[in-house]
Amino acid sequence: MSTNATDKLDRILRRDAAEELRDAGFSARVMSALPAPQPRRAAGLNPVLVTGSAALGGLLAVLFAPSEANVVQGMIDLFQRQVLTPAAYASIGLSATLLVSAVLLAREN
Amino acid sequence: MSSDAAPSDAELIVAVLGRDDRRAFTRLVERHQSRVRTVLRRLTKGDMALADDLAQETFVLAWRNLRSFRFEARFSTWIYRIAFNAWQSEARKRREVAMDLDEDSPPGGSESFEEMPDIVSRMDLERAMAELSDGERAAISACYYADLSHEEASEALGMPLGTVKTHILRAKAKLRARLAMKETT
Image: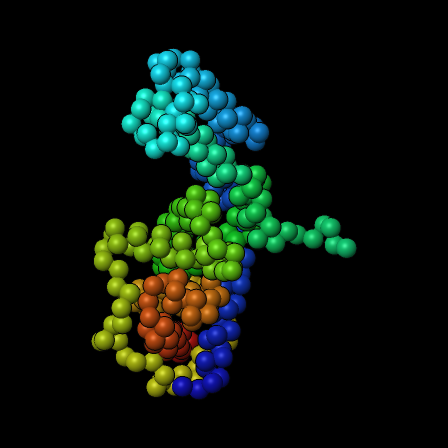
């Protein structure tokens, strides 16, 4: 194979590749084929929603829980390793809710 | 300070990812459409309508998967990879695409064609390219039309580096023969 022929073919291919194709509406067609924009929530809204839901859930849990399911009592029970009391369950549930909220907020940020 | 310098591909991608900026993506499409469509025209043997459909599919897929773009690679390399995949999927739908080495094909590099013309019409080149095997056409499209290195082409096409090099050699030998034949007739 001669170098001359190789160079010629390289030149021919590169010249052909470099020829600019006119857009002729192609980009507009692509943009109209893209999925519709998703409505975006305001940036500061998510933390408010997550924290608010957690606070409301916690409040409702405390208000409607049986009288023996007192959160403070639950903490005491847990410290005393009495895991199976209703109050301990309520404390674990509330702590889990707060933990999930914290994780969601951390991921959001 | 060049405040009105055109933003780089990376800056446009950051704008798309951060603000869902469609104008930034439009600029990316405008910037790369010519090369992507040319590559696909060569791959589809000059079928312009199919090439444009595949190019459109390529950019839509790029939009959907832009979060998976790794900034250490060039955007063009990444988008060509999507284009090659789109072409391979389409070719598989129509028939089995053969990207492996064709053992019956003569090995390149032994022929000498001194009669290569200086100027070749686009149509003659298109016809000559259409006679190459799928693998050879893909390798030439990747290395000359998409301007990828052999290594990048190997990755984009999903074929071993040695196969890419062999495809290039064989394809060039066939193209030289075909174009020289055209010159003498």
